[in-house]
Structure formats: structure tokens, C-alpha cells
Image 1: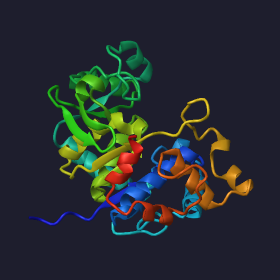
Image 2 (image 1 turned 30 degrees about the horizontal axis):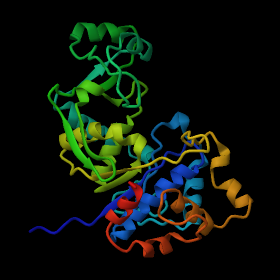
Image 3 (image 1 turned 180 degrees about the horizontal axis):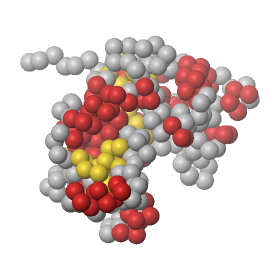
Length: 318
């Protein structure tokens, strides 16, 4: 029987602003899932969407995570065997794997604008999170039609053709069995935008595949993206990781926390005199891993759950 691959988990924030408490709770859970099982933890900075990046956010993210007592074995400040760990430094890697997919004849240019897609939408996306289902408008364009679009100055995005019969099946450690017909729900999705920026769905698969991430712990809002990513994992012949989509933290009105809310971050808590152990205690208590008012470090929290990750899962799904 072959030996199991060493567990590798990751936390991959986008530096578009300071991390709020919901982001930090997800970071804590991703770290716990990995450390409890003796795995290696990776920090990756997902800064592909450069127009939205805050130039100081990456260093602030590193500072906040370290202040809380979270550590990592590989990352932008440590390097590692699969560097670089910052997406904006991995353009040539993404381009290589895009060309691999283009060689399969499944990738095609799409000249549709957002306004045109909104007008032509034929079915709701049913929670996929980034608009309506793409109806395949540009999939069968002739060479002459493409030349006309190019002559008119239209810059295409690049989409991947999803076979009608494709069904993604996986078991989420928290959400349970999942099934999605990607074509019916989202249609042919974008790999590279018209402005040249590689899409999240594509880059995250290439990164997780090459960095040998085999356990992904992230927010439940990303659960609908998983089927698209599994399709790409399979197409690129990367092993598919296990997934655990954790609950989101909400405010007193039940609304999801946002980076736009400065009061949701660490700075106000530090200014008010809270210690890192008090914040960790609050984050752990908010998802049932500690009692209200308990004060603890991440390492102390690990000692409470010395068994494999299913003990944490049991707590989270109650």
C-alpha cells in the first residue's frame, strides 16, 4: 500500500485591505486543520487583480497573522520549494498552463462585454457567485467573425469549454456530498480576462496543484467555485485536494463581514488593549471550539484537539 502524501494546507488571502475577523477566523481554522494533523502550512498571497490591491496590505496581513501566533512553513517572507508564493510573480507559470489547455482545443476567445452578457443571460447562475450562466455565445465563432471583432478593437477573454455531460462530484468535510453540472450552472468560464489578468478559478488550481496542496480549508462562500476547480484539476492532471468550507462570521445584524468595515479588523482591538490570546479565544468561541471568555494561544488550542481533524469538524457542524 503506497504511503500517504504528507498533508499540506494553506491560507491564501487577497491583499485588497486589512483582514477582518472573519478572514482571521478562517485563517485560524485552516491553520488548525493542518497543524493538528502534523502537516505543513503554506501562506500564499493572491494578488492577481492588481487594480484592487492595496500596496501595504500584504505586509499588514503577515504582521496580523504573526501577531495572533499563526505561523507557516512556506510563504512570501520565507520562500520554499514551490516559490514564488505571491501570484503576481507567477505570470509565466500561469501562461505555460494556459498554453497547455489551449493545445487541447478547449479554450476559445470570447468577445462579449458584461453588458451584453447581462442582456443575453438565459438562466440564473443559482448561487455561483459571479453573474449569470454564460450561454456559449462565442464558442462557435468563425475565423471571419473573430477577425471582425479584432478589427473593431475588441480584446477577448479566454474561456474553457465545459462538456455538457460533465458532472463534478466531491464530498466536502463540512458541507457533505456535493454535485454540480458546471455547464448548466455557470457555463464555459473565464481563464484569462480581457484585460490580461488570469482568473481566480484558473490561478488557484495551478497554484494548489504545483504547491501540492492536498487540503483546502476556506469560507463557505467559495463552495460553488469548487466544481469548476475540480474540472481544471482533472484537466491539468493535478491531484484533487480535500475541501472543508467553513462558516462565515457575521455581524450583529447577521450580515457577512467585509474588508470595507475597518472596525472589523485587528487594529481597533489592539488599540483597545486586547491581547492576541484574547482575540484567538474570541475567534475560537465564535465557532464552538472554546467557551465564551476563554483566553488561549493557537498552540494551546491545538492541545485541546489532539485527535485528527474530524473532532473540529464535529464541533463546526453542530
